[in-house]
Length: 475
Image (cartoon, rainbow, N blue to C red; front, side):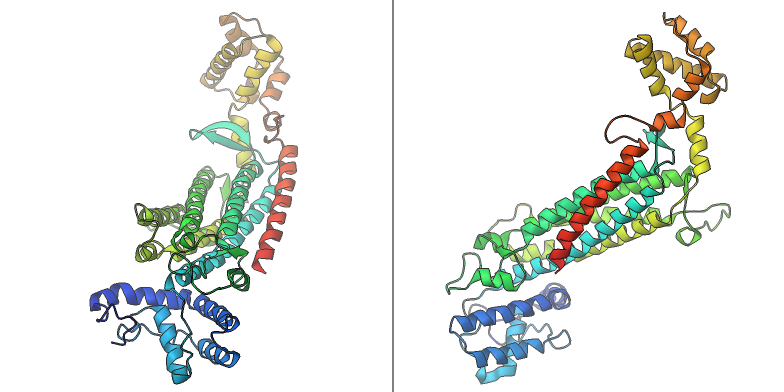
């Protein structure tokens, strides 16, 4: 064994190396090595500034580092203890031999390097995730513009409740997704602080210029305290939590879309549909089932990360942190696939306007409007008005009447039973139960087509402003 420290005299146990060290080494080579090299090149310039190596020495070290790739560097328990930092160091040592400056890699720790590499990966993954959320919002806004005036039954408790439009519904999802963009933005600013130069936990002994290092690696500033730099997992936890909560939102959204499909309000093309092996009359929608199923992974990955950190000391269990974050890329991959699948669904939805309008016309959605009319125009207390309307609708259903067949006679007879004299002309009753009347709510944020159009414009502007902010971060 090539001794990397005098404290340990044996190479790692074979089982530990095979199932713990080597898999993690390979993970870092595949996903983090480019970040390790970037950090080495930046730190070399600091070694030169500090007078610890000269320009010629730095150039030779840099040249050796830039020849590294995944085909060269391998886990080796005898030579590098299957550790990527040791492996990079041994590789440069092998290339330069006796020309390697003795002061190179002095005053260094793996802890801040590992932390910085993980944050750089997290930062890049977050940029990609945010762009996926942005694209989904754009698809929803585009689809909303096509359906502002299309009435569709809105449900509470899985029962027809009030008339809405697909645009109104999609706008509500846009509102939630825009909030998620804001959370991602705040998280990005939080993690965009450089841990490098913090050492093992207490800082380093040379006068490293951490502000310059942070700038060279694309961070807005150094992270404030050395301990938080290497110990904090708050960024990972926050971003994983956002994805878990996003998974819940997407699952609820997909459930409503499945309901719309079941009721034939929307349809999807055959390329996004499935069949039954035994029931040829069926057209299934496995893509939405997959979306709902994948959400559970988004939540479970977050739970795993959280539980791995719970009850660990802040001062710090590095290997526990590695285990906790080992599925972070799988979380991002799952979330990105989920968002992409949902975007495909949204862009390919075909609305069945006739069916939507038929069901809106046949349900007694105007009950709320009629109760308000009885209270406001006829002076009937609200709760009593609700009781009267409930009985009116029950009577109409028992007599096989639709809302458009509802007449003044039924309303008068029921009102008389409750001690109120009410007469409403038939044309006014039909207006109270009309689809148009029930869409045109008056409050801000309602289903009113004018209100929806206005809010769509607002959210388009808000998200374009977000795009500019994120575009500057990508640069």
